[in-house]
Amino acid sequence: MKKLLFYTFIFLTIGVFSQEQLSLETCYTLVQKNYPLAKQNDLLTQQNNLDLKVIKTKKLPQFDFLIQATYQSDVTQMPIDIPGSGFEAPNLDQYKSTLSVNQLIYGGGKIDAVANLKSAELKTHQKQIEVSLYQLKKQVNQLYFSILNLQEKNTLLNAKKNQLTTQLKEVKAGIEFGTILPNADAALEVELLKIDQQLVEIAVNKNTMIETLSKLIGNEISTTITFENPTIISNTATEINRPELDLFQLQKEQIETSENLISKQNTPQIAGFATGGFGNPGLNMLDNAFKTYYWVGVRMNWDVFNWNATKNERQSLLINKDIVDSEAEVFNLNTQIELNQQQAEISKIESFIKTDAEIIELRKKIVKTAASQLQNGVITSSAYITEFTNLFEAENNINVHNIQLLLAKANYNVTIGN
Image (cartoon, rainbow, N blue to C red; front, side, top):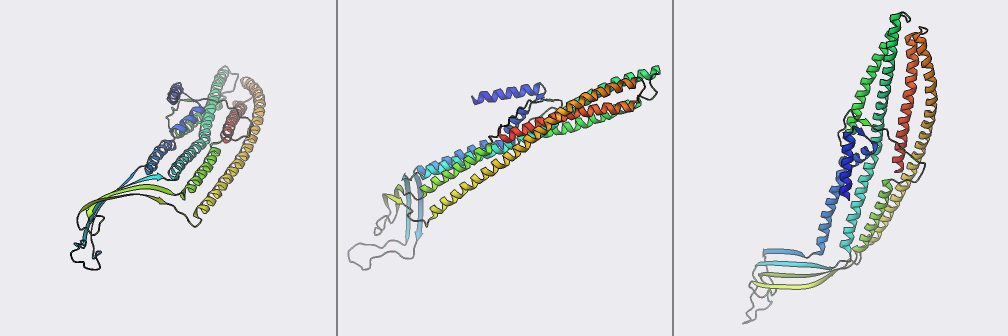
């Protein structure tokens, strides 16, 4: 199923780029997939698998091989000389070779507790990565909507250029027939040159931002690509659904896992052992010859008293839990404040857009009148350009406010976790 979703995503991504269109959601997906930090998820999983393998070896037999040769200044001897006993003092040089096997029989669940703690740490680290990747969405928003704003401004400037070009042709015709004063076309030509300069500036700024966005999402973006104008719905719900909240919960679960490990620290451990050896002397110190020998047994280790170390460690973990709860409370408070500010910003921009629409309608009427007056020689081309530029600024304002509204809604959704 995962492979199917992956190939579906690749297909859709290729389709988007082949159509020379790019959506905000695609940028979100690509930044979480291609950002260098995302690679750590697999690395952490690999590391955890290796750590678990090491931990599980504690349940397997432990082998210890020893070869030793020593020379000592004195040895144990009989305090009296018994004639005919045949006892001979050990050599000062002694040799032994042993192979020991230790097998844990009962460990009180300590090994499993260590493995569980490693798994809990993995989940916490991976969630921290998810949080960091999620926070990149606001960077994507800023770049995406800045590019979208330049794209809309470019479209509007070209429309303005086309209208001025048409008006210039009519003015030139009026000059030719004597209905308009000579040189009336100069101001229009100057304005067209200014528009060309603005178009160049927009293209440079847009290309720079596209290059930055390309690096952020880890995918090359063509400078001729069209950025889709997204439809963003933001509700006024205040229930926060951010990955940071999951991280706080995982941190608390990790603390609880640590508590479980501490509770296992003082449990008795029972192990069986066996040692076989060959040396001089053997187990019989009075037999001065190379001998084979062995011993087997069971041992129990139990840390009966540790000066309240376990109790203090548990109290420390409880404090850590309180710290995590405090951090979660601070996060919820700050996020709620940010949501309130963003909601106020959305309401403000929506009111601006309503006013912008009214201003545009009035400006259009003024420009229509000015165009007629210019053609009849009542006003100069400079006066017409002033009114025409006022209309352009009004149309640009509503475009800017529309983009700002989309950005505010996108940031609101990211902040609340939608």
